[in-house]
Image (cartoon, rainbow, N blue to C red):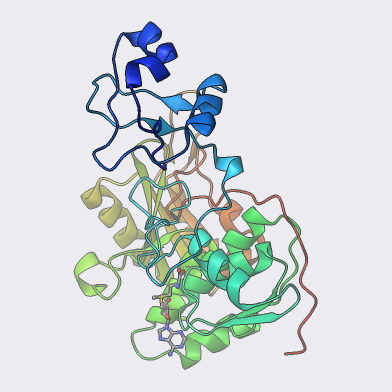
Length: 331
Ligand SMILES: C[S@@+](CC[C@H](N)C(=O)[O-])C[C@H]1O[C@@H](n2cnc3c(N)ncnc32)[C@H](O)[C@@H]1O
């Protein structure tokens, strides 16, 4: 806020309004007042002057946001805060950037209709900003987790948004193919499968230590469902048994067995034997749920039955006003 003060002269005489209102006589700055007397009086009449409580304080001119054209952006941008732990737009992706930052970059460097490419797009902040600003876009990421998150983000923020996903399984045959081609740890397949139902990978890379748990899905206030992904053909009743044991050990409420192949009858029987989980006021749901990848691809988050709306693992993005559709890119 710029400083304003009366021109030289006996302050008490010039500035009766202030004297009357708070009984303080303001003295000029040693270098003199910085705007002319008439202008100062005008500001005073318009109620635009702020009077400090003590005479040594500086008189200030009130400025309103819509009167200022702002400052030209400099090299160092400090006005867009990073995404804090409680930020509304936080989705849970570790390297997420604020969408306002990407909006500024895109607004400064592209025109509506241009194509924006982010080859390491993470949870899709660039893609989000591009969609919002009416740019076409291409986002690339190596992890299925990121792609699943971007899909969800776009669908929530821009209902009806049109885009195509290349490279992640779009049908069951492609899911089998991903499993077959994934390296021996099958981590990418598992992360993709877990992202289908909106769950978060469970301590990625430590499968052995966690007894086959691949994903975590919090719901309610403190409840949690644990997800075990199975891609191989080998399906035994004891896989369900093991999941049950892990649910007990981790004090989780629900276990989801996410399988690429149809479960066998003994597996279904074992799951049914685990009983129900209920929260007061809501319908009970099976404690162990077997969900096929086919169902998860078709129903996404609805493939898992939980008694309450889930606490978002990756928080739900806010809906954007602008639902501009991008034209199809010939990929
Ligand atoms: C720093 S994050 C990007 C975050 C993003 N700017 C945002 O705000 O959402 C970098 C991303 O690059 C991806 N990545 C790493 N190596 C890659 C590769 N070879 N090809 C494509 N994506 C890759 C990672 O999976 C990660 O999501």
